[in-house]
Image 1 (cartoon, each protein chain N blue to C red):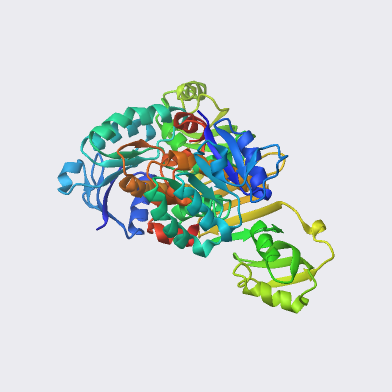
Image 2 (image 1 turned 90 degrees about the vertical axis):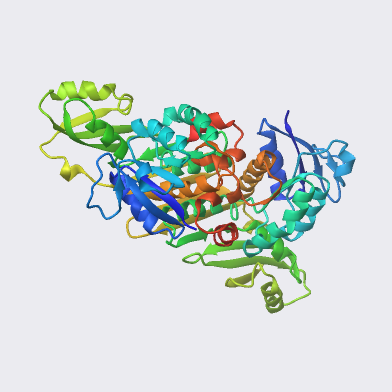
Length: 290
Length: 290
């Protein structure tokens, strides 16, 4: 019996989750949820999960992080597991706490912040902490487009379209270079001020570049390097990736984990065993990976 | 209340586990078990766990892999959790199965094959499999001294002392270069034949170098590079380490995990959440790492 999944939201991540589901023999996609369903879409789209007529096992939430909490509560209250790639690091503890009760009340599992950072990078940082509990781990992103920051930049007053590029500075610091198509209502200075109000942009050095068309700056490639050194050891993890492809893979793996997690509640990726995330059975995983 | 640990065996790993325990505020070492206890040792040594007079929570097994199973059974049957760094990859499934019943019968947890490979490298391979379930991951070791292979080489007929160096070849293949002090009973050719009978050496290209003294070849540094590529993504994990230091850290982390694992049984490192392995509480781990 395949796990029945729905995809909620059809942006970059949603489309890639659909591809990931097609590649995974243990999942089937029973529908896509969109505010305005496309009647001619290849995958059947619905405005409301109740229209599907079959109860999904898990809802894979591909909505902006700021909408994730209400969306997650909605599906949990319907008795459906949820997984998302919520990406506001400093709010994750509160987010988990806020969903804990509702998940337990409906005997369901929420897997939260399950992208690549937060997400699999968090696993790598946890492994590094095993190696040297007191050493400092540095996470350096990019250069690459941040999907989360681009989504937020588009919501800023005065902005019609935006692409936010993450530039690694040093020792886990980053700059944000945002290419903006202005809507004409605000000056560059005022757009800068508005963007600095947004929590995605408040802490990092920010440069805004006004352009006629952001399309040439749009790219889905990204990268990260996580490094830790102490006197006797050196540890390094790095990847160059297609960002939505990898985010989608992690979401699907964590959707699978949510269905194997024995106790209801809200979890992050470090709270569940890696073997729960993999398609093969435990013995096969031990044989191939351990 | 600190977790009460004992260290079983006082080779390279055992000595480093003691250091790791001293660095960990949540553990205390209540004794070291050795065949022939050193009465003048800084840490109290015993021939038998019953002499300690206090029941340990976990026994950290630092004995050669070939002795691990009987040792693990002994401590489990006394109602003590066990953790080891058993390193014979292809026997891990059987090993887990062999300890499952005895662990459950005594309501205890065994964490098996918890070094860095098998061990944390297994976690990295599992993460890579999330990223691209069908891509091939290559694990290339060294150059560096293999502790497991050196221990086994010393047990080969005709060998007085030995140091086994792992040389990376390509695509997860390795050569073994073994520096041997012969005991005079066998020729180099016969030592080669004997060593080839040992399962640690049967599959890889083997070179034996006879020396008067293996000491100059002895080193504790080692390294690994784990690489996966597919059309659009590149993933890489690498480390250069002091081998026994890192093995000891992973053992201690998994000793901690064994005490948090809610259900008795035998587990590998991919079967338990990473948060169980870390000293901090869950919220702190989420804040710092996720």
